[in-house]
Length: 228
Image (tube, rainbow, N blue to C red; front, side, top):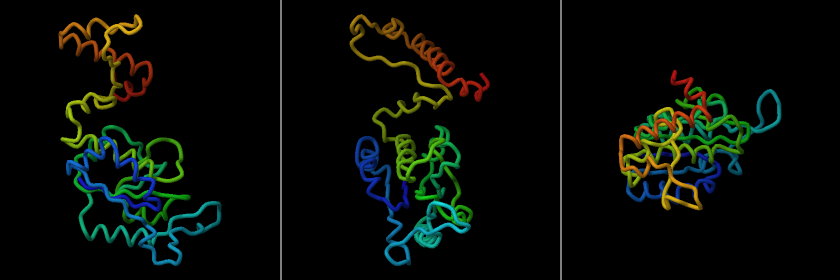
């Protein structure tokens, strides 16, 4: 998989993609992440990429021309399955969306800044708009890093144990159950006996019950969405 990211602050994305699972994914040749500095493609003086918004009001808007130039350059080099704009008014990122995107081949992500990007770019180039939550960040870079992490870990071969991702929270519409490790008795706090029983069927039943209980307590809306 290849992911290209358009940004005015490529330095913000250096660390998230240089460590842990995403670094491993790239080292294995399973994922390519390329950042492109929008300021390198603007025809305006002093690397200008933003201007005042028509109609007045506070805040600058990212200009259409630099974005169009860079998007079209990248699209001439390869076909993108999705051109994604990270924006607070986009569709909320959920596990199902991450699953879908992890099966694509080429993704292009646009990171907004200031008051956002000119609406004409959204209308003519963007195919999917994604939000990571109902709040506003200083720019789209951190949101893009979250999206790439959510996608990258799902690519086959990235995780050492590929079944691990199948049991994450939200994969089956439920929150994950509690997890325990050694020692079995820590300060008198003991691991549930069923997990020490060696009976896979009982363990699976306990985990499902705990997932339902935790979801009901913390995210009842998920059960409502699932119709349970």
